[in-house]
Every structure is written in structure tokens, then in C-alpha cells.
Image (cartoon, rainbow, N blue to C red; front, side, top):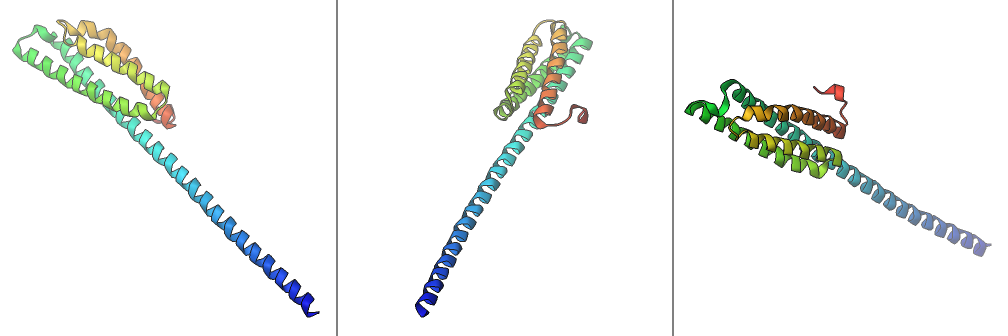
Amino acid sequence: LLTGYLTVYVNKKAENRAIKEDVAVLTRLAEEIKTSLADKSWDRQRHWEMKRDAIILMVQSLGLASDALMNTAYFFRNSGGRQGGDSVVGETLKLSRNYRRKVSRFNHKRFEASLLSGKELGDAMVTVHISMSKIALAALSANPYDRMEDDILRLKSEIDCVRTLAKRELGVESDGLA
């Protein structure tokens, strides 16, 4: 009788210990899975934040370049550009330099954003940069406003496209931003 009791007791103890070990293994695996999922979630969140920041900085620099272009075009249209005296030529050079600096800054921000954004937005940003560079070269010509006017209208449409694609990349409804 005692041998039967001891056999049942030892078997039950062994079963309990095996269950305890299995629970420990399963708990450790569950913790590892939880940690892995948290790390992946953090990585996705960090990537999203980097993408958002890069796109916002690119759009801001695009706005500054566009404003500089509008100031330059307005000056050319109203002053005759290079056909004035020394003060007009000086102002023309100052505005042109400012515009080229803004285009250069946009190009740097465009490159950063293209590393994190989709192909469609990347291609649209390249198109805008090419158009802005073309306009910057036109600003150096003898009668810049005449050569820039059509390019500026085309550029406005390209900028609108970049803004729309940037909103889409960020998951922002088009009606939600001005």
C-alpha cells in the first residue's frame, strides 16, 4: 500500500514540476514575443515620425522658395528687372541670390524627404526642383520676367501636386489643410 502511495505521490510531483517548467518556458516565450512586438511598434512609430518631419520640412522649404520666387517675379514685373539703374540691378541680384538659396535649401530637404517617402512624391519633388532651377537660370537673363511667366504658372501646378502627394503620404485629408 505504501509503495503504491509513494508511486502515485512521486508521479504527481513529477507531473507538477513538469507543468511548472512548461509554464516558465511559456511565460518567457510570451515575454519575448511581447518585447519583440513592442520593439517593432516603436521602430514603425519612429520611422513615421522621421517621415512626417522630413516631409513637413520639405514642404516648408518649398513654400519659402515659392515665396522668394514670387517676390523676385513681382520685382521683375514692376521694375523692368535688369533694365533699370544700379539700384535695380543690385536689388535684382539680391532677390535672385535669395531665390537660389531657397531653391538649394528645398533641394536638400527634398532629398531627405525622398529617403522616407514614396516614389510618386519623390518624382513630383524632382520635377519641382528642376522647374525651380530652370526659373533661377531664367532670372539671370536680360528680360527675365518674360521668360519666367509661363514657367511660374507651370511650377504652381507642380507645387500643388507635391502638396497633395505630401498630404496623402502623411494620411491627411486634403480638405483638412489649406
